[in-house]
Length: 349
Image 1 (tube, rainbow, N blue to C red):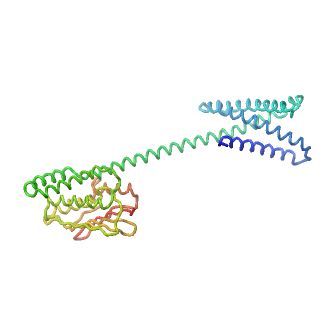
Image 2: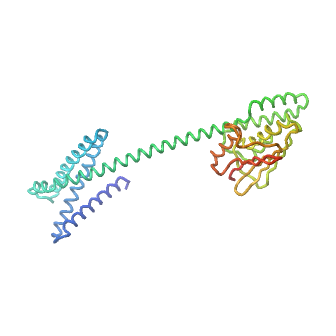
Image 3: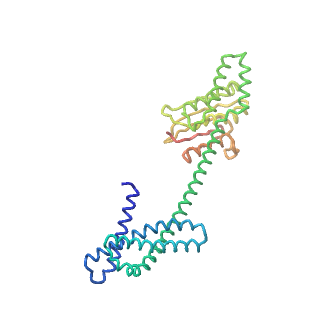
């Protein structure tokens, strides 16, 4: 039995129950008539309700077409439709009872006159209730659909913004860095061809990673990318750049691409390139509670995190972390007289 059949069965049972309840109230205050008369009244009421309900359902669909007009026309149309359907349904029910031999022909006129007003009134009231509930439900569904559409559009906009931030973050191989690296490679080709070849390989690794559209990459891969970046910078800065990288044995997980590289680039640009003595830089990856952390520590004078400009590498990274992880991730700053620590914190996966 499919759903529509079950719905019809439930409706017929509901009608039968309502007819029975009405008869109980009708005879409850006095002496009950003989059982055959009670059964006849139940069959009569049930047949009338089914016939009127079926026609009224059709009438409601017709009246719904008037709902775009003014209030007088639509409610007038509803009352007219329910009146016609009630009268037609009563006639149809009486014909059915007559055919089944349950209603004498001589009583048709009397029974019609006795019941027509009550049937019309009941049909109009129930039809109005169904119409109000139906229109209210339709408005609620339309509102929910509109809200859902707005939510989907907002999520799509947020996703596009997140993808744009990811593209911005992944494009950290900036032109000036590329030109400086190519100049260094050009100078190394004659003096140290082996180092020039290794630098080209590291630059290729950075360029390939910048084309990766994934939202997260393994930490090990990101550390190798940061190491390639630092090695390339060391070909330019020489002994002015001193760095070390370490990861605890139990550290594993994923981070946004170019996240660690952004931190080391920030240290090189704000400390290594500006100080004649260069910079000592340490990269330490470890697990702290349920978080994966990567600390980039340098011995520079540091900077004011509140002064970060919009669109700056660290500002973009902070926004990207918020898009991916919410409040569970972030970039933390700790400034000391002789060092600056920038910590990347993401949840362990």
